[in-house]
Image 1 (cartoon, one colour):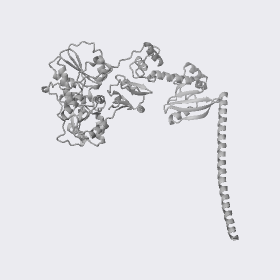
Image 2 (cartoon, rainbow, N blue to C red):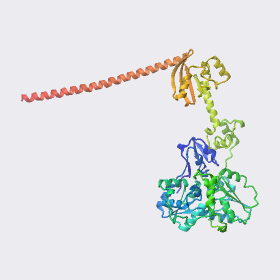
Image 3 (spheres, rainbow, N blue to C red):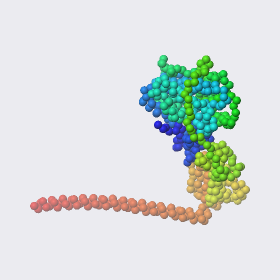
Image 4 (cartoon, rainbow, N blue to C red):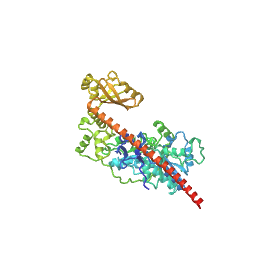
Length: 581
């Protein structure tokens, strides 16, 4: 069954702030009709956009319903619990968490770290080969997707092994039967996509956030549970596999299993760090086997997109290290992790646009020279040229360029201020001019008109000493209520004024019309005459309505009287006729 993408945009919630565009490591987000939508073919499902979106418009597919349905339709459903549960539920004994999961209806709970231990054993066996080659861990689905789509030259360096969760799924089905259901619980969003691709191994993937919500809905409080003797992990507790959710955890267990070789193990976490670590690595010659443990989340899976953010990374790391057991005597483990051949994924090749097309896109946002290219990054792209390429690719809109929109708005405002026949002034909270047009300077008098010519806009000029009606501006600033259509006398002028807030209690604007001008006076007379005609017409219509209503009532009343008399006459005639007989 095809499932929707793990991450999507709630369009009504998107505030087109472009923060997700800035933060996305592979720019898998396009702006369409001022809404940031995800380009699923480019998306790594790392979940970073979910965490940074200020309005919560980036949503994660809810698979909790699917997990509940699985419990209702399968005889036995087991939990594959990611090792980061230790830092997600600090202070909660594993037996209590197991009891809570059983209370939800699960048959048993097992540690995903058991699958991680199998992967470590197989990876250690690969590194026994002294050939100086690069091996990149395939444990993180985000990294796997990144190499397949964006670094195809490095895709062949991925260790041909399943991830820990898939290894664990195979282990559970081998131990308890293929007909069981398996629900994976972790802080990872990308695992949803990985599980979607292997429905025969893991049925559903939910997050720790989903688990907390589920426990709340069922009114199951962890601090109120009493574990039973059989509340323990099956088929056994994990050991060094519990280190996997922290940066360097996998390397520690792999290196302990292949210490006899000259293999070098390195770990990097966070997509920005990974991108830098891999830059130019294809061409670099190696003297020894090199194993790279790459985790998309900074600090490791303990900081997954659906993990708790309330605890410091250092503390989470300490909690994981304190729980996991690394016993060298049991290493190296047997290479039992199933092999995996990564399917053919069409790599995303960056399009090369002609310079003329890039320049045309730059000109469309007012970038006509190198000096105009500010490279501020406000659009979400590293520089103006990258933004121009996104425009050409249809992934961006011109409104994303902050400087372009600001200049465009300023040009529109300047044109309106300059061309309007009215006098316009904008003031701040101190009643100092932010901007005014020449017509307003003209009504202030020759001195201010001359000052305007020397300093257009009169910015910073105090209005109080210049006009007596400054109190109207102060009233609008204080109360936040507009004053519209007020006639004022100023010197020999009669001004028709409207004063209103642009930003309540912060910025106020006044528009004045000199109604002593012949053309304006003629227009006002015509307008007033039209208003009188409208009012008279409305009055005539009201009178006609009332007359019509009154006539109708009179007609009804007269008809009733006539009908009454007619009935009386008829009765009298009948009575006389009977007496005659």
